[in-house]
Length: 494
Image (cartoon, rainbow, N blue to C red; front, side, top):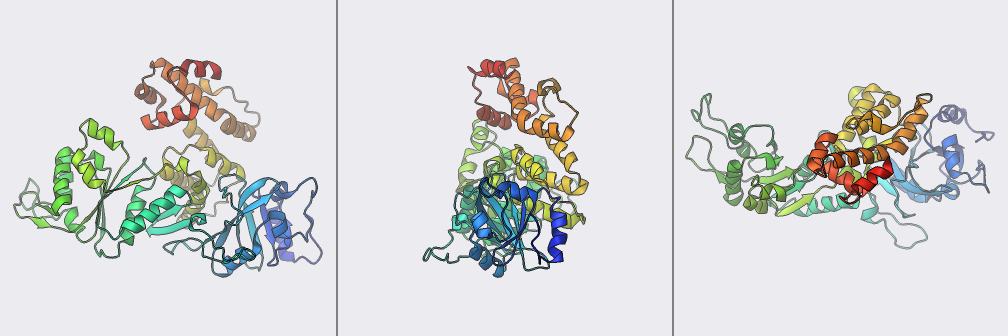
């Protein structure tokens, strides 16, 4: 967009920088008058009837944004406001914040289609991470009477520990937080289930944090990290002479967590012998240290987490059914990240900001293409995998290398011959084509071939593909595979 006369030199300087940025960016003054749009933004807001927005165009007219609502939240202290823009390209989410060292508004649009609020009045104000709950403040919308922003339209961001943040934009995750607030002050066990890396510890810490009636600590025990005999002494403690090397008495984790919370991660890995002792603690709060006959009484809230199918573990005798019903008073299931994709860009920004500060790096913001690739990635490792990816991106600082890493993770378990022939004459373009056009096809072909070779033995097929059994079942549902259609699907994909 050409610069209007009288525009400050600061705006000209910013424009010279923003012109080369591949994020859609706009600058407006407090009245909403558009001062600048870069090329990426113009592609989104231009139409045949209005090919070039005039300098005098209002941001409200161009993007149908309720400017007064945005200003009200920003002036109230919000660091940024997320709105839904409606322009020539359809409904697009955007983030509005003050431009540093000026009185202008900086608008960054996210044309990925993942924050589709489907509501014109959905405005989300964010506060700093230090606040416990970050949700939209209630405000009056002029011209609509006493209409207030609904809680389900808000994004929740809550610090629950050092380096741990609970983020909820998906309805299922917001429901989980409501559940946490209802049960936090009630001393009942909670079984938190979900795939590895979805954030079960974050939910456990949030439950502990909201239980203001308990002054004790939060104690975490990874039940898969220790063999059964060591885990028993770790949980219940021991007396001097209880075994070789026990030269002095030692309290266990249950004693250390008295009047607080103990979090038993990966509880399905605990031996059935220890599960029976745990059952007694849940029933009466009593246990004995190893080598002692003295009964120890504790007041501990027990939270447990697992990433396995507990019903299957019960069926094969790996998990006690009575313990399951004792723990499952309040079940809490966390959906995988691929089922709450609207949270991916928010989590990306959260981790990007955190590790920039931690490592002292000035890593550039990701391009639209990188974010689109991130959105299409299956993230079978869930939030933990995404966090590690952002961490590597911050450290390496090379977007092309990060893109190649994503493609490598998707294709590493499959024969190269199944990925087709790649023309290396134009690497960025072919990389984009590979991720967008061939990823699903390559996955489907590899899965169909593995199922054919194993005569539909899915666990064996998962082993050949180098993925988990659960991941294979998810992909089979995604591609519509069934025993009757396997050969047909395989043939059609060749």
